[in-house]
Length: 228
Image (cartoon, rainbow, N blue to C red; front, side):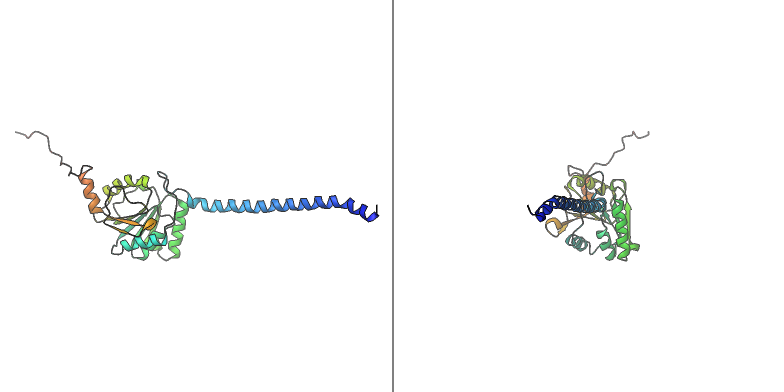
């Protein structure tokens, strides 16, 4: 056998081992980079997609441009205070403030509240907006003349009773994505997932007073015996 062939055979296995080792290290580096990127993305995104309301599973799903426009359309002749229940990243509150409302957002996710405050400052409406970390079931809505809610079906029944018992008779309620189960809307706007339903407090307050049977609740009578 020629000397050159013997030398080639003697170095080929070591070269193959080195090549395989380099590929293995490259694979580990790529895997580490991809894995680290996914972990970083999850760490950043998790606070924004976590449920906003603990009592019901209400994850953060940003309102579409059409939904925001529909809300502003049905409230275009309204004014005063407005509250967005589960305000998320604050886009409804900020848009309402630009239309002249004194707008507030209620949100349990502190990351979203901080982000909303930053957005309001950046958009120049921080003086006419406020964002609060709170549970909607633990606050009163008596001070608001306009209410916007992006809810889920499981919560709408209980929310009906709460709003009807607390809101002033001049208030309007705008439900997005899901309507209230028993209230009759006075108006709707949009279609599909962008539909919004508008409710008048005079109507649902009247229904609350009438009770589930539709009859006016009897007044309490004084059963004490008259003095003689």
